[in-house]
Length: 238
Image 1: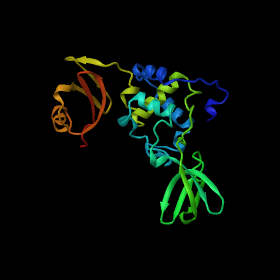
Image 2: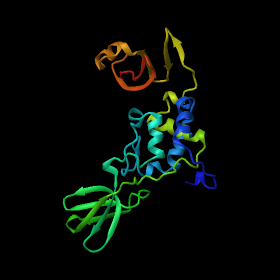
Image 3: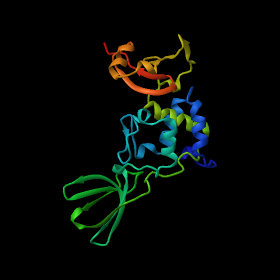
Image 4: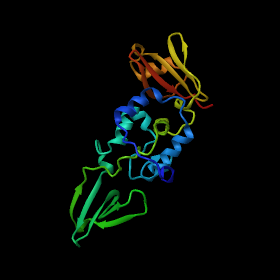
């Protein structure tokens, strides 16, 4: 986007960014993370917090599925693992035409491709009876180098934004430092609370629910240390 116009490029490696993210996802800047998400055109393909396109995976829950390292790996090496649902295909038809894009609709005898991921309206409808050959690409439609014109602070803000699911109250954006309480780490957030309990006490989801102050265990958030697990819980609605 225009945010990056005239900037030099940096060939960031997974190793250096993963190292930065390992202890740099605190005190992050939420507005700047959101700005980077938009400037990198992520919304063009990805659904996020009820906004965006449909030609790439929904990233709203990426923070529950990926560690910062794995998320950075996906961004830097988009063709390393490609979800079959979002693979690009090349279709040759009996009238001599060749179309390349991502399948966005398959209805009866008609197949619809989005041929320009930056523009969801660029679509072509193909009669499936006229298809002579269809080849799935081994290269992701997601471009490489998306981080190359960001500085390290912008990249960390972007990662924190994605991990947070678009929640400005996520711990990555909190200014306070963790407090030590009876040997456990605990963050006090505005509407959420992180509970850390010994791994040995965790056997089933049911047992976890008995050991936290609220019923709704939102997600297993991250491994803090070898012997502790962290859970983010949401107060029940009243």
